[in-house]
Amino acid sequence: MRVTFIIKLLFMILSPCITWGQSISLFLPKKLTPSDYYLFYLHGGVVTVLGNNAINQSVPEWGPYEYLNILDSLRMRGFNIISENRKEGVDDSVYVNKIARQIDTLFSANVDPKNIIIVGASAGSAITVHLSAALKNNKLKYVVMGGCWPDTYKEYLGIELYGHFLSIIESTDPHGTCSKIFEERKKITSFQEVKLNMGLSHGFIYKGHKEWINPIVKWFHETK
Image (tube, rainbow, N blue to C red; front, side, top):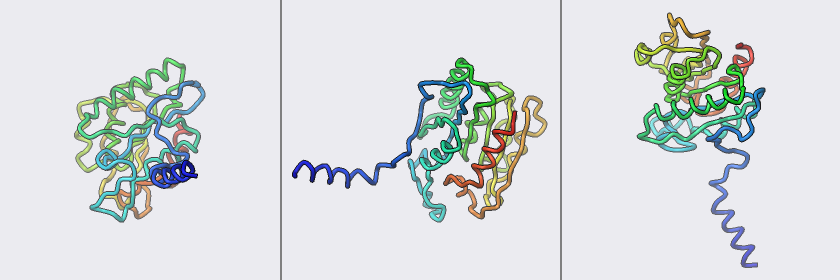
């Protein structure tokens, strides 16, 4: 009886910390299948500062950043998901180099670049764009979400970009269009921008809403 009681007590204490069916995969799958789809997800900056389920106290109405639920929502669309909790004080270049090596590993396993997509939300968008410059592949697919202020494009004037790009923006988000980053780029293969009207401001990236996930999935499968 005492053992059973202790087990139940431990379960009660730990259960709020357990998220059933959800996980963060920092690494590539052990078995790499060339025909599979691989999605790298780069979360928003609030997760870096406050962790999973972070709440921005300046705008509590956005609710928690449902990081694990977002990963599961993407996983359910048929992707192998690779993601990582980024740490404060670590330069973006560390994550650019790490993901670039992982993608090189996929190439070595004969995974077609068109089966790989990198999705960056808000602060994660900067890493996504720099990955394009680092990998120099015109078939890879990149998504930036809510990652652009009016002058953001100036940060990328000195680098060349490659591949397919999709930008997802929300009409009520003070962040705006990312189109200036991609104007007059000779090396990018394509650029498209989707504007949502969810009324959620920048909080639209905080949850795995079908309104932004479905356009990404559709674009991924239609883009060759």
